[in-house]
Image (cartoon, rainbow, N blue to C red):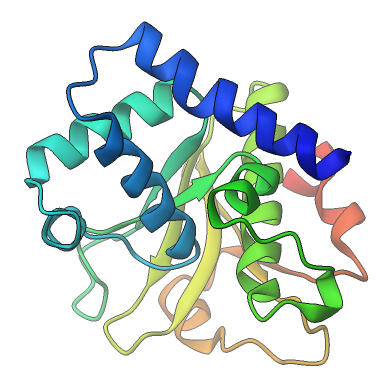
Length: 209
């Protein structure tokens, strides 16, 4: 029954409401776009690559992504850069506000211990909860991810009053994240690691302090 309710929610919310409220000329394209984005959570997203994959153009992809953002289905996370030579300059990731919607799009409702995408799901969950906490408590912070040209990465950053608060997110609490490159670049930043054993402490308003 729960899965059936999710499917009904997906049908009514994702498509019916969006198509009613917005002028969508190619509804099948937005369906395929959502599925493509569902596969790409936790990875950098290229509008050009999405356009080629979906036989469209980057301008249409960008417009549809904005519509999906306004419908509170997805949100963009840009990369953070202060123009250091080893940082990527322009990129973005796209996350879903709800993992259930992502599972609907992929028709994947397997138990956690059977999933091969648990790391992506965990990252999407934590990043979305951190973003919700920021919005719900009206924190005047800008949110980013960080990545170097050598693929060193920090999953989520908030910048407020020139102060950097960063989180690295891992499902496997025994796996040590590679954070040295970021810490060398931004030694003043406060960095926390989030895993299933400590995430409640990090998803509290006081964790921003």
